[in-house]
Length: 510
Image 1 (cartoon, helix red, strand yellow):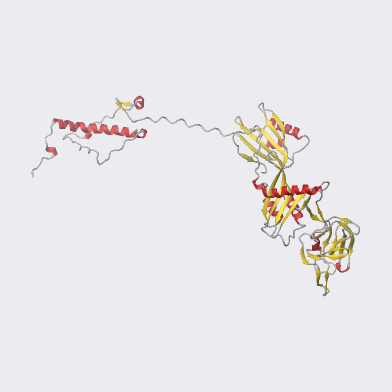
Image 2 (image 1 turned 90 degrees about the vertical axis):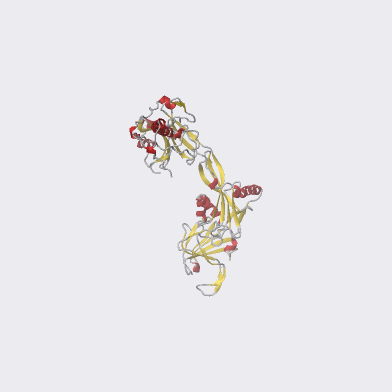
């Protein structure tokens, strides 16, 4: 094998010696230039593929001179770029292609200043005045005096009641941050009337009275019985007074103790009074109602005959109001029916000439119908006893009372539902209860079988008008908008309302 001399022992030509000196300098200069271009790499619009490292040309090994190292070579850094060169498309005579300077970011737009207007709701307390209320929120004295005078001129001699709400539109002034300005004040003591005080451009205040048109709106409430019938209706959106009317109209036909069950559905049709801006001035008058029992449906319809008062009728035109109540007591329980039975005290079989209702002692007893008191006092085994004569043929009797009702004595006229006495256990009685009798032609008959007696009906020309109204109400019981689905129109803003919504604030009691 032939031995080759080591690289350090090889003769060096002048060309190779010069190349060895210049190459490191060029390499260092290229490294600095490469670093500069990498710093500007984020500004490149187009990117060129990076050559594969494996295929890249291998860097020639560094040449070391015998008596010269890199530490002996002074590297002179390139001169810094001027602003003109940095923004130019050429650098030291070399055209830069594929580069684009990123334009400076536009100045961030300043956020619009927060609105200095806000809404405020105040409530008038007992002994309060509008002027005092405005003073409490630091409204300047001159402004609050003007507002109070303008408002009083609209109200005339009327006074705002305690609890009335005052709606304010306020504005905070930069030069007087502790003295807010009232842009508008409104108060609505009646649903159909609103009083508005507005600030003008010259700083004065103008007064305006708005009168809203009131019109009827028919809605329905549909619900299931959960608890009492009245509570179920009120929970579903019906006013309590309408539910009381509905229950009273049903009470002549429905046995609430036996027929009324949980989960049964009912519908009431209401006539509300609503202002033109959607404010309800009356929660609803009962027009019709429908109760779906297990085996039948009971329907009541409001109707006013000419020259008469409003009443409730069934779809056939028969009045639900009978001359006699089904039971002459509220919340009573029947304990003994009409007919033959063994007397609980005498011990032998005899005719039980009436119906017994158990109830707590002192429970009021009501007159089953309009009539005249024919007897009031003790009557043997009946104890304290009252008999009412309704017609020449019909009478009712009430026994075992603890005491008589106010003013009840023979010859006095009474109305249906009037208190004639109170439950007791006088006479031959085993406990507090009411013994109730119904007499026809002087003889006792079953009171429960007399529920259709003396029932008024619509007839003649009124019948056609009633039938048309009944068809309308029966259709609306199914098609009228539900109370929950009726949307109130958005309230109208005053001319001083802010363009941007302001956060409502509640003060003094809300």
